[in-house]
Length: 221
Image (tube, rainbow, N blue to C red; front, side, top):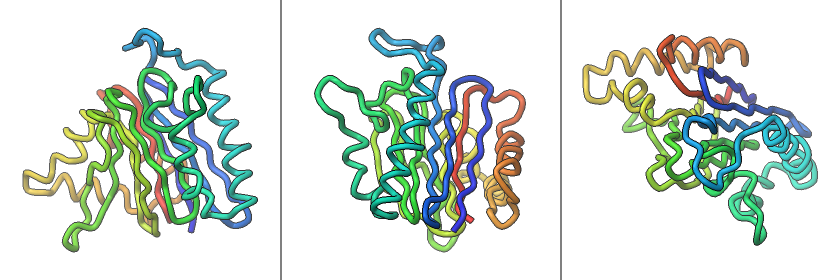
């Protein structure tokens, strides 16, 4: 099993990290809005320091846990990621203070923890088999926010992106002829993606020049 990570960004913030620990793939993809676009009272702006803290959490705490406990560390630790001691904001999860809202993916082995901050405008979309056909399925929306653990296998794709863009681009084929929908699914065929840079290019081509915001994706090869 190999993880591929990719992103595109016109505005907003993206943090991508990837590692292999004792043969176990691990990855983190977090993206969201720019603080000066919709900064709410009490929300801390995204800085290089906060991005570094998030990357440091992955490279130190998360990979250390996998090294000590194996791939099951993600399942055991998810509750700890989404909660926090009194007076402290969680690093990841619906209540994190990474800007005024974000969506994120934290993966290890055959599982991924996904989350969306309430009111962020972001969502999580995955490619799923529905009655024998591959489709884009929205699994977390910003209306209420939330979190989930999703099983991964070869061919799995998870996308953190603006909900408006997902509705207008990824999901539009479901109520039409399906042609556009099928073309986009082909773009995310992991057998045709050679690496992270290739995934970057594909996401950028789909987003187009008029895209505003940021997208982060995890694909399993």
